[in-house]
Image 1: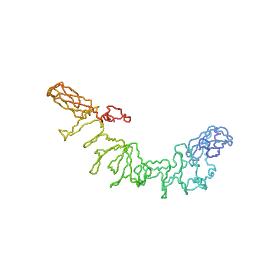
Image 2: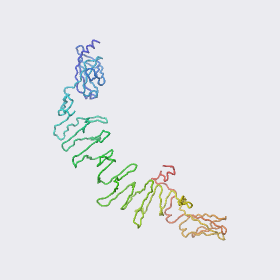
Image 3: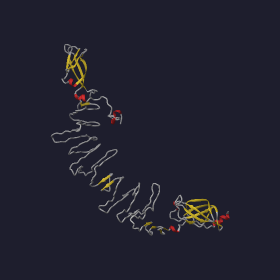
Image 4: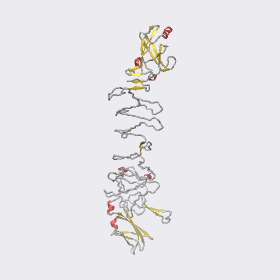
Length: 522
């Protein structure tokens, strides 16, 4: 065995390295062919081989892992094996192959050299400084130079040659990187002498052109466009939609809002729409301290219309109208914190009034919510007043400057009127109570209550109301009787506008409460 090993140490291996083959699972694999001699004669049979890649002929560091090939067949001294040290093993530095056969390392290590045609292959020229040229000689200023001399209008210097089929999330067919830190360096430069495109990118579902400024500070530009023509376009977008994340400035390089325009703006479309899912939407005028005016003008017809729909329009300061204001299916809300709210009509000394009219139906509604409305003076309601409760509030009769006095209204499920008084019985123990002449025209369904004052007697209603009067009897002469009569309205308006005592809520109000705080609801 030792004699065999000694003989192996004298072996001279002949290396022929071919370019990488693409037929295997990896495009970094290559075929290695060698000749193995033992004691001067070609070796044969199966042998265990180990292949290791080093960065120096002697010493140095191993590159990658050792490849074990057990039972490699050697025929008449020749063996062929496919090796793959991976893409990371080749970085344009020298590589040397160390071969171990049956546990014995052969010497010297074999240099891995390119085949002669790898220096120049079908128009690809590589100089000694590793500069490459395709269709032209290499340039010292460029790592790669590609040139075509064709005058065909559809020819491309590079098209489909530098490509990637990577299925990963990010890959690049062409990548230019300028590592210079001084001046205005250019990673990828494109130019065109005619009316074509200096740079053109397409993508079926991704980004045709993508630019990113990776610096986290300072003023930089992801995409910068500039034109030297006064009628040209620094940027031109056709079709689809345009999205901008961040503040956009027109006429300013320091925008402070999503859209910041400095200068005159002309809109030739039909609508400006402001939408927001929540919060407050604002359209404000920022002016100099001497004031500013916001105008809506139709310059063609000298008349302007401003339509606000369908929800709220809020004025946080004075709002003046020099023309008619028409609200179609809308509301005017007054909201102010910590101070009084006022809606004033200022007119010449002749007359002024505020009208809320439904011109189509002849009906009108005024809604004030949710808390307090104060009317200084008289108020008139010609329809039904619906409320959660009612009272009067006056200055306290005993301490008018320090207290208020309040009483609640008397409520009834009917449209009930209450009448009362006192009457003195005559010598027969009777009394006739005469009501106003309109009493029976206004009321029906009378109910009576009698109370003796200063004595007791079995008084009763001898005759009910007929001809607007009724008779009390059963007492003694001179006895005072306090009486009370109630009636239910039956005039024409009351008959046409009966108040339902119980009713179901409309569908859009089911689940809501008029007074949630009373039920300890939010």
